[in-house]
Amino acid sequence: MVKPFDISKFRKDITKSIDGLGIGFNDPTDWILTGNYALNYLISGDFYKGIPLGKVTVLAGESGSGKSFIASGNVVRHAQEQGIFVVLIDSENALDEKWLQALNVDTSPDKLLRLSLSMIDDVAKTISTFMKQYKADYTDETTDKPKVLFVLDSLGMLLTPTDVDQFDKGDMKGDLGRKPKALTALVRNTVNMFGAHNVGMLATNHTYASQDMFDPDDKISGGQGFIYASSIVIAMKKLKLKEDEDGNKISEVRGIRAACKVMKTRYAKPFEGVQIKIPYETGMDPYSGLVDMFEKKGLLVKSGNRLKYIDKHGKEHLEYRKQWTGEKLEIIMHEISNLAPTENVEDEVSTVDEVEGE
Image 1: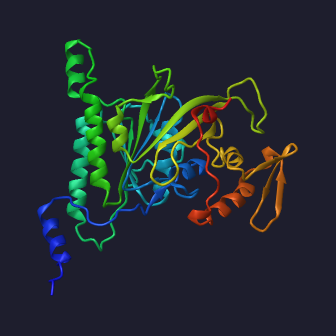
Image 2: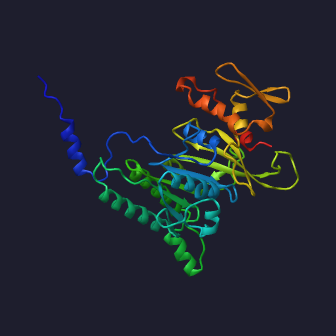
Image 3: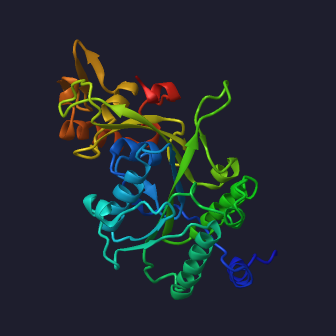
């Protein structure tokens, strides 16, 4: 008779011999809302989830596209509401306390730690030191571990030792060779460190215009290796918002329309996009973008000058576009959320032109 393999002994031996080894699956159990239901859905496949702990998520876009508003504002606020401690790393020296408080972020020391770091190596050392202490303090798997979110704003502004040395010498050639490798190593290491723990990272990054006529999408700085190492990547583009409170077209710019396209995710279909309106005076509408999304999926159908939706009971809901807000949109959201995976709504891949719109 063949002697059965002692898996428990094997597990015990490799756990002792390999530091930081993770055993089993580490599916996310905690999700942080982005402040917009459509964006939540594109990232996680669920209107009421968003960004997962235990993973590295990147928001990349041009200046003024809403990256910091979502990352350092909405996500931090929702994380705090869920009892998640936030470590905010500000490499741009741009996040003022009054601005964060205006976005309802709790800046008290027991809820948020702001660090001003400019070097890639210093960020890596900070995260490594934290994780070593975290693992040492919470060795018992049965003990509830505190939930922590690192928010790094931004990756693109981080420096290498060569950058600093060249600045001191007045010889600004840049360090294009080492920086992409250092950013990739930073993200790759944090992904591996966070996997089995209640710790995650949300980082912002910059984009630049593509010089390739056959691939016109904006490129994310940091190289392809950095994108491969990240768990979720969302590209953002800034468009002007020229609408009043009632949605009527006006000539004055009242805010921005953030064209978001999910370039990478393992929880929903990638390469789908949505436009999110962020008026300067009122901030982001959590329902923004849902009407366009439901139209693309064939859930809202034009009927004359109105939009029609037929619910699971066969009841017809007919409203003007501007009247599809709040509770009316939640009817569709709840019905989609209750569908089994095999019954999911029709998928359509959005091109960049479709996302950018007008």
